[in-house]
Length: 132
Image (cartoon, rainbow, N blue to C red; front, side, top):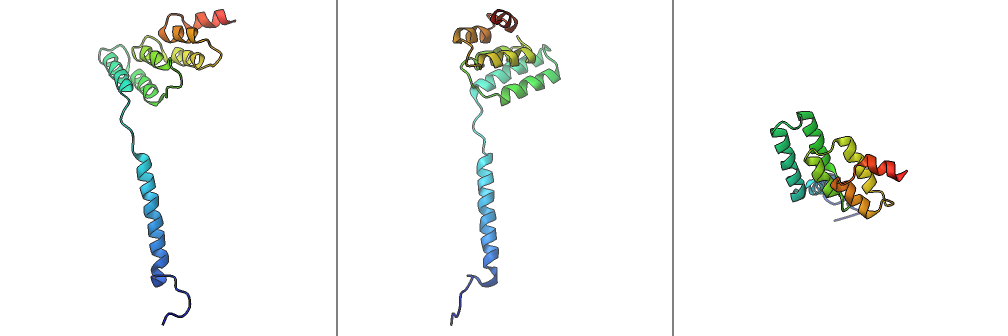
């Protein structure tokens, strides 16, 4: 009766242990894949972009590029939403968007200048020529 040490469930104990570990791993992976509700501001920008595409202001390729930028961009600055809205309205191109984004995220750029850049009150070229 019960001599020695037992592994629990005999030879099959290690299989049960592996199955439990795999189930935990699957649960962790599934819980990480849950996405949060879409940001209402991003949805607004995407609707603006869809409208621009529908009326023919931008091409299909340009639509895809702008859509991916809007969906993937995180707001690291208070002026980024203003800039994104201009971008969705096709007021600026991608090159200008990223140049302005770089400047408004620069901690050395004064907030007043960041706001003017984001709103389009001054262009990136004007700012860079006056900065030098």
